[in-house]
Amino acid sequence: MMEGVTTSRQTHQTLDLALRVGEMLLSNGAGAADVTATMSSVAHHLGLRQVIVDVTFTTLTLSHQASFDDPPVSLTRHVTHRETDFDDLTRVDHLVADLLADEIDLDEARIRVAQISSTGHQTPRWAVTVSWGFIGAGIALLIGGDLFVTLIAAVAAMGIEVLQRYISQLRLPFFYAQAAGGLFASLLAVGVAAVDIDVDPSLVITASIVMLLAGLGFIGAIQDALTNFYVTAVARILEVMISTVGVIVGVSGGLTIGRMVGVELTVEPGASGLSRFPLMVLGAAVGGAAFAFAAYAPRRVLLPIAAIAGVAAAIYLLLAERDVGRAWPAAVAAIFIGLVSYGVAGWARVPPLVIVTAAIVPLLPGVSIYRGLALLAADDYAGILAMITAVAVAISLAAGVILGEYVAQPLRREARRLEQRLAGPRLVGPLRARTKRR
Image: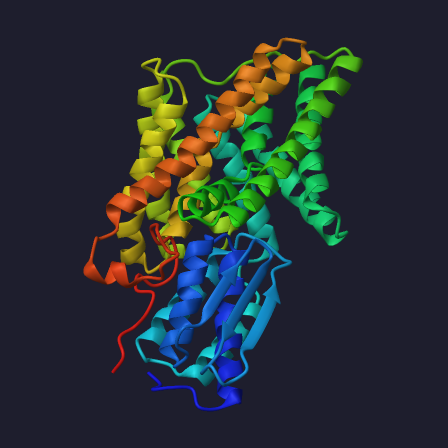
């Protein structure tokens, strides 16, 4: 560890490194508290004391003033590109850990972060598309779909992935990609219903909706709200709302077109009872692991994610059968995910956020959203209650995961030395916000 930064060049290099690390964490879904503490750790370890860190949803700012007589140095980076890339998230997390352990110096850290941001992935594009098909198939099994529903849901999921990628290349706002995905799924279900195949089209729509829902955004928003980053939390929630509204617009448009051509889709919330319980749990496991693969998670963590997602789904299904609503079973299952993911993440050497996000995907409230849309399309205002249920489930999942992390992470004395603004569990980044001076 450096005793102190003595040159303006080193100061700028240190601030630039911390900003690049923070940018990659924030763009991949890390909470503002985690980003703030990690950036502060990097700057402090490299010799900059009392660095001011400001994190919003789109901007990162670092300011440092060596003494009262010196002019302050301030650098800013804007976050314009967002995606779920667990490989980059993991590599940045390892970089920070190596830097704080003095295994690499400033120059090597700057080289590595540049390589991470510029290097592509070895996983071919077609494999990612196929993995999205497995996500759709897994969710179809979870909600009680048969073989035909599972196959159609897989085709729908792959079609949505290709469609959204094409729209992204056109540089259209994400809202339109979400609307197009919802429209594609609902029109495919309308086509299936029109040819009179013995398939429940509502299950196809439900399975496809889940892959469009913003689970990572909800987790980040709730974490930011709990750790007093209210501006960033509101921005994340607004992004999630716009994303979800896009899905609603697309699905409702497809249902409307179906009614215009004489095809009415029945309201079926999913499987009834636990007659297919093993297949439903298997579907959740497949869906969680496939999502992790699609997001470039390290291969070593796929099986643990599948196991955690399967057990969490079993907890949810068993509790939901006791007529206690949907929010409480979702919260209990999410707490389990939060508790287990911390230990598994340490074993697999990945940030807990990787496991949490992937394992929670099968529990996202696609069923409630579809049920609400279908009821509202039929002028049944009970659909409003279904949409409220969907929101309650989403909040329960996010809050439950954060609570699980609160309980799981060790309450060490060093944790009190974290940044004053850090008041929650760490889903990515080092546990210590600052390292000891030598």
